[in-house]
Length: 380
Image 1 (cartoon, rainbow, N blue to C red):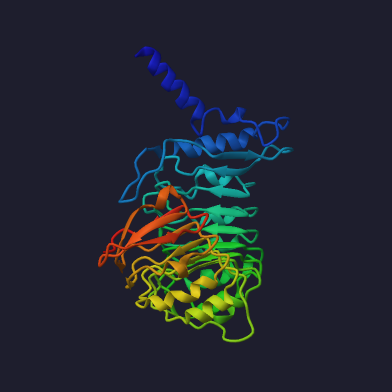
Image 2 (cartoon, rainbow, N blue to C red; image 1 turned 30 degrees about the vertical axis):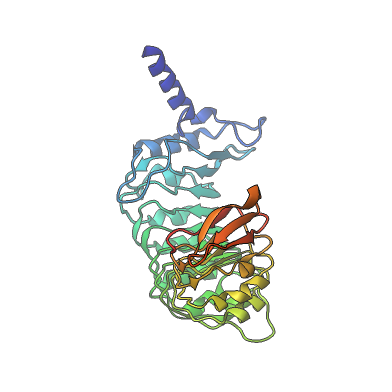
């Protein structure tokens, strides 16, 4: 037992995020050690919070204490990158806390911690060199500090999975100041006060936009689908949102489109025609009813992920329409499809034996060559 305790202590010390940060190497083996002022500030930040393996509320906890990255500048030694994802941090980040002494940070990840429903401090606006900020899933609440808009060098920002409200005026300033923004993730924030047309002013460099479950209201700007660099657009769960896709002379560079759990009527043949670059399409709980609705999907030749669960499909699964060459993931659960998948046909891993409820006849179904996940549960 003594030996085990010493081993555990050794592992805890040498794999803890905060162990001897003054001796951590930088990104290069020949670089100087992290600047002692920054090391001291980080240790003080750690000591201002408790460390817990449990996450409050109904969220799941992830893993034991660890740090994914402490990066210091090769020349000055100042800390420029800090990743404390799921490090068990529990408490409130005080506005006069030592975290804000790490003035040279360019990347800060505090996701999957528990900051006790506290507000995001206005002091985050002091990180004038910040390029990547991730505060997702960390139990922040209240209004997003307007000072976040001061971070004019941001390339990516993720505030998702917090009980936060983003006022229209703050979003307007963020859009105006972050001219190099490439990724914006506001999943589950309250954006009910924003004017959707303001999204058209987002950086032309934007490649990814996640506004799922953000209480959007009104008409989504048609011009967003014409943006030359936008590749990921997630609008799931916005039941008061309406969308009109451009009708003529356009094709979209989008590679992922998520419209699950919305009340958006779409012309699927038109959508397929205009989104030829899609490799992921999520239409879960989309109120489809007719199997013929799926026929146009066979033209999505680049698709790898297709989610059609929680619709109202019935009858036999139209395998021919879904035999997409590059498909890796296919979700068809929670519909009312009928039939039985009895076995892999003749030990052929690319085919399934499908039998109808009404006859003993078996249908041999070819599967997409690269299919890894097929979800069919909760059908008939």
